Length: 290
Image 1: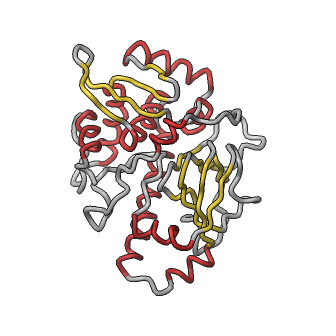
Image 2 (image 1 turned 30 degrees about the horizontal axis):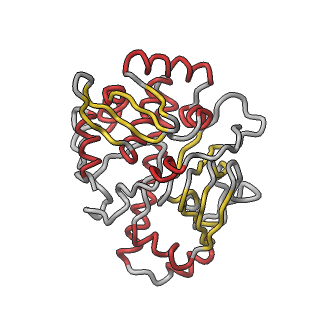
């Protein structure tokens, strides 16, 4: 694992961006197409339960939320970055399978709320974090007489989360490491990236890094050597550069992963991805997919 060196104030502030954190424009959720490995923001009607009833705590990096693999609470991320990890790292050869929950997202709880079955993995902090928890038992009581529209939002939220995870596992199973890297950076750019047209360069994305190197390796299931090769190609082909805890690159780097997602969506879908990834990123920043 990594050291517990604290991320910068600017990085934490960038993760507080409330893109897609407002009211949904449709009963099916935002118009944003599915993206992998980054949990969609929790609807404000559901976040209000945490504002009123949750207990908050601060955690150092790399701390598990629960003493065992049994998940007993819904946990909302207030600040920082958390992870959900398939299986555990103990005795596991090579890179794992991990997804990310930044602020205003559920870190865990939706997989086993009613069944209380093992969630097949662990949940932990990746940075210094503030989290808010409501036990499953308390949430049962709170939602026993909830309005139908709130319950529908809850079920829709669970589907959005599950579809994101399904796409992530599909990428791990089907696609090469470079495409997986591009898919992670596309998801992160949708929520936290800023895109601008730079004369003589083209459309350029600047965004906070999605964690440390180790975190990226775990999400895309790649070795350190493989990530070195990916970054070398990103530098030479797409002008990728690291700016402290931020990264910058030409948006065209994300097009192959965007194409794979468009193909995977198939035909006759409700919320279509545009042909060019730049249009998606400009649209996301402008609120066109809320």
